[in-house]
Image (tube, rainbow over all chains, first blue to last red; front, side, top):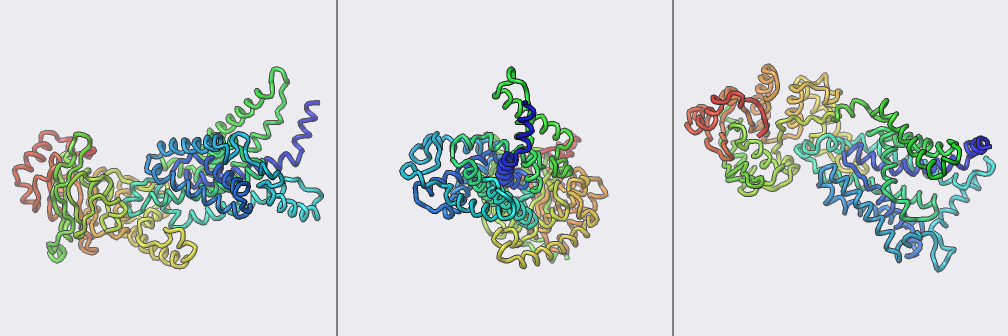
Length: 330
Length: 273
C-alpha cells in the first residue's frame, strides 16, 4: 500500500510544479551568487538577506504604506541594492574569506531584525494580509494576473495547476536573467570582473577601480536576490523570518557548485537537479518505526549531500564548469 | 637617440619616503628620482626595501611620510588604479598572469579608455564600445607579435611558461600606455636567452615608445650594461645614485651590496624583500 501512495505522488503534476517553482526561485538567487563568486571572486554568504529585504519591503509597502504591488517591486529591488552597496562599501575592503564572514553576519542581522521588529514585520507571525483589512493581501494583485493566465491557458489545456502561472513567470525570469548576465559577461565590463576574480592587485595595477566593480557585482546580485525573495513570498503566500535562514544561501551555493562555477547556464540545470533530488527523496519509503518522519527528513538531506559529494568526485568543476579554469585558477 | 630621449627632465621625484610595519622601517627616508626617457635600475641587497618602495610608489602600500611626485603631481596616498591611470604602471615580482583568462583577454583588459567598462555605456553607446574593442584587439595582437606570443593569444594565460608569463606581463603593462614602467625583477626566474630578449625589449621600448623604466634587479651585470642610471638602496635608504660606472666604484655600495654578495653568493637569487 505504501508503494501505491509513492507512485501516486511521483505522478502528481502539482507536486512537481511546486518543485519547479522552488527550483526556479533558487536559480534566480544563485545567478546572483554566480556573478559574485563565479565571475568576481567575492564569496557572498548573505544572499538570504537580499531575499528577505526584497520580500519584506514589498509586503510592508503594500500592507502598511498602501503602495500598489507593482510599484512596490522596483522599490524593493532598489532597497536591496542600496543595502548591498551600504554593506559592501566597508565589507568589500576585506579579504575574500573575511568578506564571507561579514556577509553571513549581515544576513543574520537582517533576519533577527525581521524576527524582532514586530510592529513592522509581524515578527514570528510573518506578514500576509493587513490585520485591519483581511481582504488586503500582498498577493492580491498577483492572484488576479495568475487567474488571467490560467483562464487563458485553460482554453487549450484543461485545468492548469494553481501554481502554473508562477512557474511560467519564474522560469521566464530565469531565462531573461541568464541571457542578460551572459551578455554582460562578454563585455569589457565582464572582463574586468573576471580579472578581479583572478587577481585583484593585477587589475588595480592596470588602472581598474576594483572596489567599484565589486560593489556593482554585489548590487546586481542583491537585485536578483530581491527578485527571488518576491517569488518566494508569492509562492508561500507569507513572508516569515524562518524562510531567510542561512540554510537558504547554502542551498543556493549547492545549486551553484552543482551547476558549475563560472557558468550561468549551469545554474538553472543545477537548481533543477538539486531540487528534484532533494524533493524526489520524499518518495523513499522506509518503515515507521524506526524511521519516523523527522528521521526521514534528515536522511533525505544526507542522501542529497552524498549525491553532491559523489558528483564532485567525478566532476569537480560541476556540470557546466570549465575544468581548465578551475585548475588554472589555483 | 639616447641623449635626445634622456633630456634630463625629472619624471618621478621621491623624497624622504617612510614606510613602517609595526616597529620596522622597511623604507626609512628614501630619496631618489627617475629621469624622463631613462632606464633606471634599483638595486640593493635583500631586505633593502626595494619592493616595499615600489609598493608605496604605486599605491599598494600607504606611505607613512614623505612625498612622491610624478609628472610634477603629488601621488603619495593615491589609489593604485588612479596612479596607473596617471601613467605609472607596474609589474610584480611574482608574475600575476590572470591564469583562467585567455592571453588576449589579459592584454585587452589593460587598455585605457574602453567605454564598455561602464555598464551604462554598454546600453547607450554600444557602437563606441565595439569600435574601441576592435582597436584594442588590433593593438593587443600587434604587441603580442612583438613579444612572440601571437600563437598563444587564445590560450589560457595559466598554461604559459614562466618566461612567457613575464613577457605577457610586460606586454600587458604596455597596453595601459605607461609613461613610466616599474618592473619588479623582470629577469628573475627566466632563462638567459629569454632574459636577453626582455632586455632588448626594454631598450626598444625606451627608444621607440619613449617609455621610461625603473626596474629592480639583482644581477649586477644586467644593471651595469643596460641601465642609464643606478639607484642603490640598503636598509630602507638610498645610499647612492648615479651612472653605473660611478656607482660601481662607490665605497658605500661595495660595502652594503657587493660585500654582501661576495660573502653570501646565494643572495643574488630572487627571494622576497
